[in-house]
Length: 139
Image 1: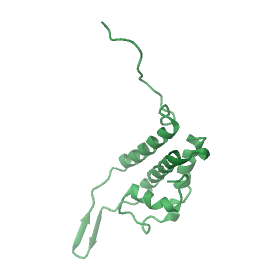
Image 2: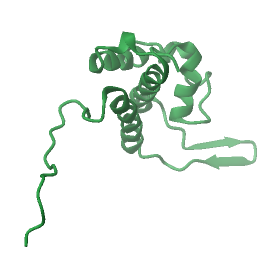
Image 3: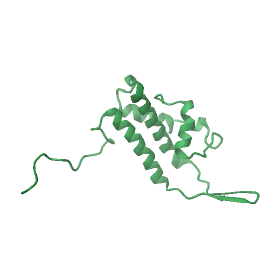
């Protein structure tokens, strides 16, 4: 998946949110609005100053990170349809914990970025509180 992502990857953004989400319900033009795909792109570029030189699997990982961040940004803005009736058929969907879904999408983006940036990097601003010290067990 190329970085930055474009309209060809927008079906994957929709699928990351909900596999039943269609272009009719979430048009490409909405995904392309500044608060979504471009904001995710800026975040990746801010976190990885060497983004322009990334190729191969690293570029693909940056593209996936942007995809997941875009989905995380879009998810809270989408209306949630819980029930629908068509003639005699009534469908009801299970309610989704939006905060947990957004966190899961962001975590997937962080995993992709961590691989590209190196294992030592994590989410910006996170301080390591615990570490391993060399030595033996107390006797």
